[in-house]
Length: 220
Image (cartoon, rainbow, N blue to C red):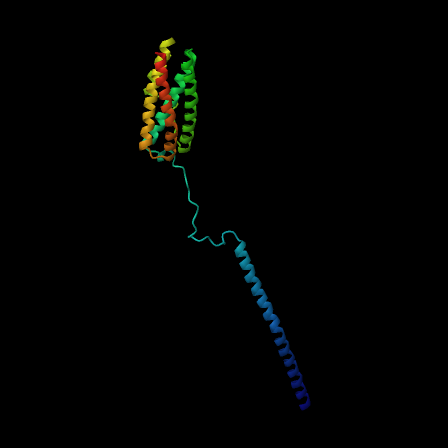
C-alpha cells in the first residue's frame, strides 16, 4: 500500500514536470505568435493609413504658392499714354485715307509719289502702334477723329489743281500737329514702349513735314 502511494506521487511528479517543461517550451512560441500577430496588425494598420485617401499628411502651411500674375491691361496706362496713342492712331488713319484720295483724284507726279510714301510710312507706324496697344490692352480708334474729319471732307469735295494744293497744304497742317503731339509725349510720357515708339516715328513725321512744305512751293 505504501509502495503504491509512492508510485502514484512519482508518476504525478513526472507528469507535472513534463507539463511544466511543455509549458515553458510552448510559451516562447505562443509569445512569438502574439508578437508576430501584433506586429502584423501594426504594420497593416500603418500601410492602410498610408494608402487610405484623406489620411495623408497635409502640406505645411508655410509652403509658398506661385504668384498669380495678371496683366493689368489699360489700367496701367496714364491719361497722357491713352491720349497719345489715340491721336497717333487718328493721325495715321487720316494720312492713309487722304493719301488714297490723292491717288484717286490727282494726276500730278509729285502729289502721287508723296501720297504713296504717306500710305507706306503711316501703315507701318500704324501697325507698330497696334502691337503696342494690344500688349497693353488698349483699343485704338479706327476713325480719323473730329479734328481731322474736316480735312477729309474738304478733300472729297475738291478736284484738279485745287485738290493738289489743298492736299499738300493739309499735309503741312496735319504733320505740324502730329509732330507737336509726338514731341509732347517724348518730353512728358513715362511708358517705355510708347517712348521708344515716339522717338522712332517722330523723325519720320518731321521729314514728311519738310517734304510737304517743299511740294507746296513747287505746286505754286
